[in-house]
Length: 294
Image 1 (cartoon, rainbow, N blue to C red):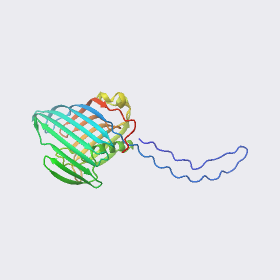
Image 2: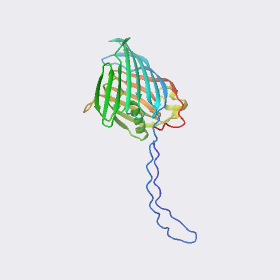
Image 3: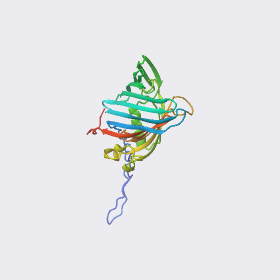
Image 4: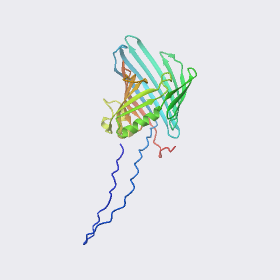
């Protein structure tokens, strides 16, 4: 949260011992410039989350789920932001049997969040799908995407559109400012590399109580050490296909958003079933002595 500056006094009442006199009116002072919000610095880190089934049922009748997510995030506003993600998930269903997916995604986002590169490789039950490889450029009113794989193609979408790191910083800025909702178009190169999502984030109240940093003893690395005192907010982020009117989210991610961009208490809701992500390891890089000045 930002500190609110109190307005300066418009004048002083001067008292002289033994004599009373009126002080001359103080000249008007120029209004103080508004305080600029502190920049959001995303922590360089590697996080490991173990997956388990939160809820099943529905048409797919998911009976169990297990797996792991590993996220490796590096960069700053000078060098740009690189993120490597791997998610291995094993789903057991009485209707469709066992299904194992192995998703590997690598992205690079420019420091000014105008350019973006992405590559995704998915293996389902041991069979690889065609890689998705491409790049994107974001302007004020348009997004231009060029695909190299699985086949050369390009398309344009109306803007403004945010890339993942810019979206994360926007959420932290909104949370700091006490905003409760953030609507934004987001492109992350996922799926077939052709989808721009409408997103809606609902942000809860700020919390910095180390004793309640984890729910039901989850996320052990966040309950102690440097993360225990970092402010955080409970966020529910819903993804929608683009369109008009009321729509059902195709995917919802609930998580605790820490001020340095680290996420805890993950819950991935796919509609038919939901998966919990429990952080089991967190490696934080030492913060730089001076913030990056692009």
